[in-house]
Length: 395
Image 1 (cartoon, one colour):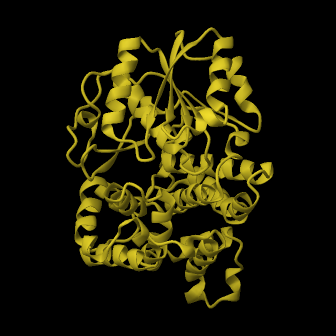
Image 2 (image 1 turned 90 degrees about the vertical axis):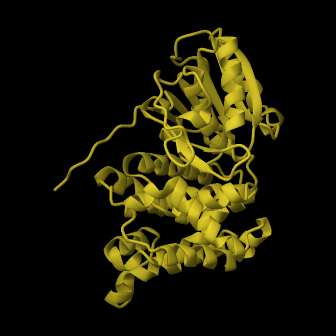
Image 3 (image 1 turned 45 degrees about the horizontal axis):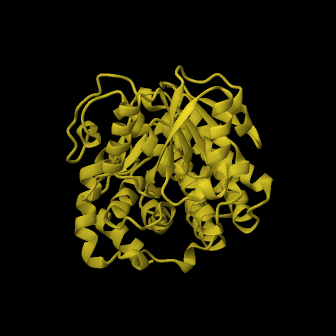
C-alpha cells in the first residue's frame, strides 16, 4: 500500500542563462543580503560574484560578502558568518558556489535568526540537540557545480571545528526559497571536480532508490538521474564546454537532491562522511566511489529486483544474464562507470587513509550518522562495516 509525503518548498529556476532572472524575480523581503562564497577565489575569478551583485543591485539590494568557506565547511566558519549577518542586519542569504558553500549558507541562515553556536543545534554526535526557536533567514541558492543536489534539499553537512565529526543540520525552514540552476555557471569546473561532483549525484539517486523510505516520485526521479548520469557524466568530464552535457548533469544533480529529500540517502553516505571528517582533503565523490562496490555488494541479497532496475537504468540488458545474476550487473555497471570517469587511477591512501584507522572510522560512522542504517535495506554487523572501509582503502 502506498503511504508517503512530498514536501519540497523550493522554487527551482532551471536552464542555461537563467541567472539573469535574479535581476527581475521576486526576492525575499528586505534590502540587504549576505552573499556566501568559498575561499578559493573562483567566484571572483570567473566574474560570478560581480554578476550576482549587479543583478541584486538592479533590485536595490545591498550586499555583504562572506568569503571564508572551505571545501568541508566547519562550525567556526558558520558561527563567524552568522555573527556578521546579525551585526549587519542581513535580511536574506545568497549562496553562490558548490555544495559546500550552499550547505554552509543553510546553517548560516539558521544561525542568523537564532542565538547560540552552530554545534548547539546538531541533533546527533556531540551536538547540543537544541531545537531552533525561529525559522532560518530566507536563502537563495545558486549552484556552480553539479553533484550535491543541495539546492533541492534542506540539509547542511557541517564539520566540527577541531574535531572529527561531520553531521547534517537542517529543518523545513532551511530549504532554499529559490534555487537558480544555470548550467552555464558549471562550464568552468575542472574535469576531476566534474567527476567528483557527478558521481555524487549518481549515488544520491542510487541510495534513494534503495532506501526503505523510497516512494513513487523518488523512484521516478532516481531512475532518471541514474540513467542520465551514467550516459552524460563522461561527456561532461571530457567536454567541459558542452552545454548539453552540463545541462543534463545539472538536472541529474537537482533530481538527486529531490530524491534525497523525498526518500533519504542510506548508509553509504554515513561511511563517506566519516572518511571526510577524518581526512578533510578527501573529495566527497572519490570517497563514495571507492566505498561503492564493497558496500553495494552486501545489499544485493536483500533487494535483487531493485538492483536489476538500477542496472537497466544504466542501460544494461539484464535479460541476457541468468536470473540469479541480474542484480550483480549493477556492480559491473559501477565498475565500468568508475573506470570511464577516471576513479580507477585514484586511491584513498593518497589522502592519508590507512588500515589502522578502520576501527575509528567505524565508530565515527555509527556515532554521527548511524540513523542512515535504519533506512538501509540490509542489516549490517560491525564486521561488515570494517570490511567495507578496509576494502575501500585497499581499492
